[in-house]
Length: 194
Image 1: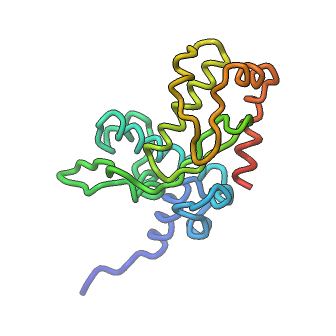
Image 2: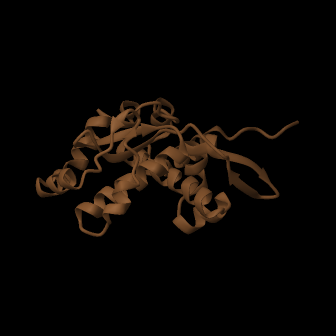
């Protein structure tokens, strides 16, 4: 005769895992989108779950950029493996001899701030490389406004991103900095989340 299942212990374990992932309990986790398709879907997750998801994506990005295993990246960033498995499972390759590597690509939603068409906007991308490109563009824009990026770096930026004009004109960036539009980033983020 096989072992009898311990349903209360299983339920308790599911609730513990859900709390690690930022949900109040297992039932709330089941209702939340594991792989949000849009910023609005992401906005429906509880804030602690959004933060846990961000941590999971940071693990994937670090492992990909530094050629680390997922295990090494989770240890470096202090993120629980259960969080990475839940929110970024599609970006995990096979585990071989206890070692997991990120896949070459994934289709996980990432939101990145940029200055587009003269304003702060968040772009939605489902490509890890495109997200990294968006981060680079915003880094140069931010640094130019704060006086640490050169005109040459601005000139190397793409003209458009996702069909929208990338702000790379020095006078326009200076004006955005003068008007302190970069302080609108939290508002732009909340707008994307709905």
